[in-house]
Image (cartoon, rainbow, N blue to C red; front, side, top):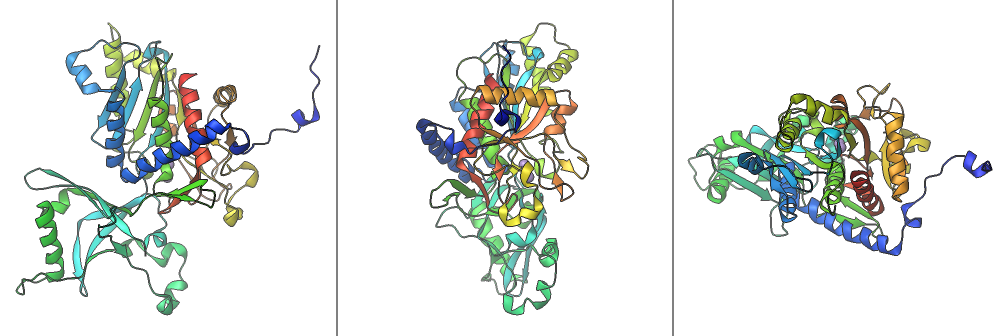
Length: 473
Ligand code: MN
Ligand code: MN
């Protein structure tokens, strides 16, 4: 007998709020995962710190460093857990599946770099009784948002002897913080006439780092010298050492629950540490041996175009797959690596632009993801006429839809704002270029790329659930 088609079925689909669709147990899990996540972003303010954090958890969960496996020429067995740490800036986790790698992998890939402000190679100067650092911003920031905020400094300095000194100042309550000034409203008549983009310029993002002089009255630049004296005493570094440093300025302080109901999290770096965390947790929580080899990629440099040897465009991942296949098969050939990529399925784990009623005119409400409606599938990103996008094939979108539905994952779809309003991209196209099926899929964010961004805890939980379902299905 033919099934009778009801009007409700014809009228299409309505995405619902996660809250109404999950059990009490899952609600408890949502709160627990949010606490774990806040610890992750509080400790992971830079790609290096996130990389260390992920490596520590991976090792605690039985993952071995691929370099050791290669050295010992270990035969790769199903169920083995392997990771590769690329220069302490990106990290990739593997659980070897029952099937050969050649038959394809299941990948969740996100990035652990976030928009921020870097120091210039020669940063320190003084002016009018204050010591400053010159900076160069990293990624797509709206510059006016970074003035008048408590800021911290994280990173590494390599001194003349080659010793690597790790620095993190401004996170503890007893630490000092740093500051970029804005103009007082009383004198802002001219600045107020400028556009938001021009109100504070790139060369205006100068960080105030001191206001006392060296005791050396003979010295020329005593405010600058005072800062160097402190840094030398504490870290054994000199002015020249700044040239061999990577110091990043980020918002100081911890992520916080938001709303009377504590349903959301406001913090720095949700893009893309929220999806990276969900992907990491999904992999770490997998029990037993998955059918396909599962992979979690936590990459650097996405915010500046994924270039360089720690970005997704680098050969690092491909080389790692080749090394693993070489340990898995007797007669390794390059051709098998190519086949592996052709057979691979990927969720490009990156955040989406949540619909914001406060700025309704920037969005198409019918095609935007909403806070609290779960993981968002973004078929394509790009700008203007989908320029530069990875447009996921309908067949693959169906595959993911089917997995999510079978595993009770609450999902929604959306695109990045209105057509011709702007645009953006992710790492999706990179693995797609290698032949894999890829779709963007992650957490909707309010105020993306601002010093403090907002996500919903329900979406974080549902994204973790979705990634895990995809990896093991
Ligand atoms: Mn991102
Ligand atoms: Mn971004």
